[in-house]
Image 1 (cartoon, rainbow, N blue to C red):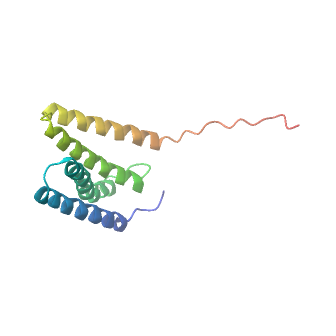
Image 2 (image 1 turned 180 degrees about the vertical axis):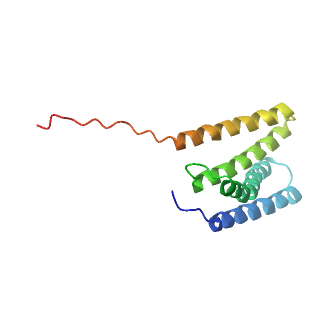
Image 3 (image 1 turned 60 degrees about the vertical axis):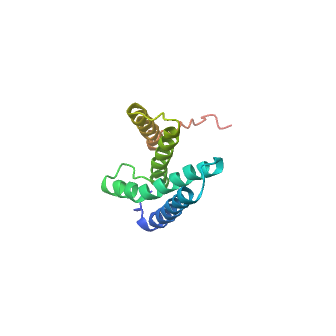
Length: 137
C-alpha cells in the first residue's frame, strides 16, 4: 500500500471506542454489583477503552517512525488492540492477586514478541517458485 493513511477513519473509531469504553466503565463501576456479567462487561469495556485511547498514539508512532513496507490500517488497529488486551489481562489477573512485576513484564514481553513475529511474517515477500514445464505436448 503506497498511499499514506489518513487519520480520519482512525479518529472516528478511536473516539467511538473511547467514549463507549470509558462511559460504559463508569456505568459498570458506579451502578452495578460485581456479579459475573458485570465483571465480563467490565473487561470488555476496559479493552474497548484502552484500545480506543491507544489508537491515536499508535497511529502517531507509525507516522513518526515509518517502516518498510509502511504499516497498513489493520496493523495499527491490531497494535492498539494489543494495548487493550494487555490492560484487560492485567486487570483480570489482579482479581486473583496474581500480578507481580515479573508477570507484568513477562506478559508485555510475550505480546511484543507475538507482534514482532506477526510483523516479520507480513513483511516476508517469499513467493513459491513457479516451475515451467518444457514439455508442451
